[in-house]
Length: 177
Image 1 (cartoon, rainbow, N blue to C red):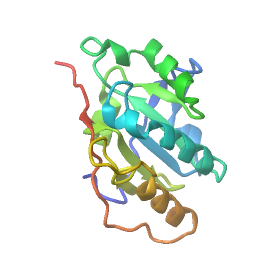
Image 2: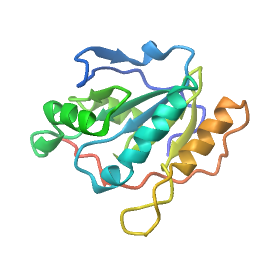
Image 3: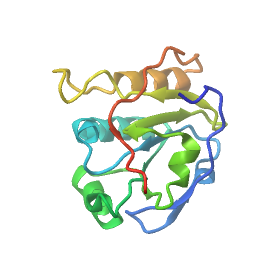
């Protein structure tokens, strides 16, 4: 897992929803949650509704959210930009859904799976990297975003984010061959 305190790697990627470029610098002096995601992963699908609800709640508190898909669309056409736009509409995204065609952003973040979640403070230093919550498609728990919410609450309240963090679990990023 990436070391806490690490600077957020820069990105400037196309938003499949608005068609505009979105850069890390668009969120200056704002906490930002970066989630590596995709359209087809069962782990993503399992938490997507709750992730959208949690994002809306924390966006009202000044936290920015950005989802990024870095999957190889040659082998996984369901993750192509046009399908990303449809997915975002289906779930009512209130945040950008960026396409990392070169996969360079995923590599810079050392993202491994979908969903892979990173929380940066207002100075864009890493304060949390890990799971949304302990729920998985097969363990009978209901997704509630507890781990991410606790990290965001601590960050917004000026408290230390619990350094005991659990890695994300999901489908591996589909790297180009």
